[in-house]
Image 1 (tube, one colour):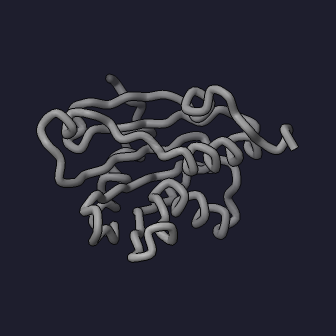
Image 2 (tube, one colour):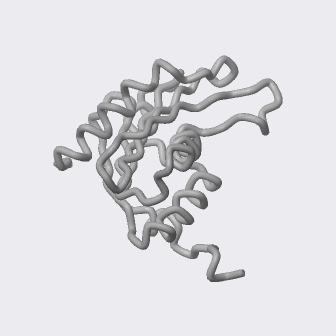
Image 3 (cartoon, one colour):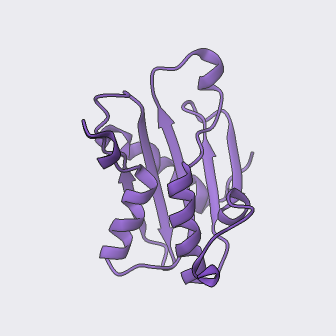
Length: 145
């Protein structure tokens, strides 16, 4: 899969933030790089907690940080994860969880677009590019309220 320069830079940044993951329970580090409308990279890493429900995913960490910095529109996100996995799992990409897909979708609606999503296997040998709306084929958003 050939990435654009912007997508490759985002994936490299997501990989770089993996070291900041706080994942003492699952040992599954996730890094995300959100590319906001002006091209700025906003990074997020997962943060686990002994009360598992209090944990936050890398994608939501990046979105919350972007919002706090005044960015609500984005045109892409790259995600990569590494953990103790077997060889078969190491060749697969890790997609956002359902909660992350939902919040990505809402921010895509705010931005009025369908941002690209780069998903990479831990070794970056397998890369898939999709879009936020493709991740959520039957969306629920503000229009449904």
